[in-house]
Length: 281
Image (tube, rainbow, N blue to C red):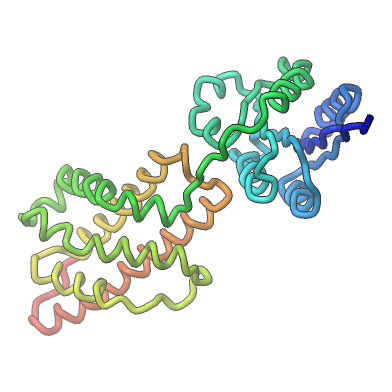
């Protein structure tokens, strides 16, 4: 009879005592255990070894660190059972998005004694169909119309911006191309802070806003609300976003929106010189 190798478990927690206790419990339960004390050490192990199970703290020390580890495990070991645990009991009630990324969430330390049973149950059931996670670019592309509608609803509630009366189609005319530019940037990342790609649409938008009677402050406020609407779109899609890519994506979005605003403002100022009107702050 061929012996089945003991399942390999990776435990990730920055609490040395708790990590050692979990390692001991799991080894006594018949598992092979490796442990990591932070995200970087966990990513190093995931990159060079294969695991059947991941058990990770959610906060190490930053909120969501555990989801970064889960994302890496999903990529490198897609068949692995992944379990997140947290010191906060309310996480059970607020875990819908997290459970979309992982197989279970438990509260420590009360549930630590049930680890062996929980893992064996998960392994016996086998992996369900892999969750299809989407990139930030894909979510933004698929939800572009929803994002635009969210932005427009914010703008129409802003007492300053709506002093310029425009049809909705004119107010939102620049957004489809801007979102396409964002998606392109996310799929073809540039070093943050590098010289922005020239956007003729951004320049045209600056001229249009000048002609329409916008002030510079209105343009800045619209840009701010656009970032809020984009981040709301990501928030609404937490159940499918790839958490390991979210932080980089958010920084790329902020950088690109700011770059396009700068280009629009440049053409806005240039247009003000052409029409010989003062620049209105």
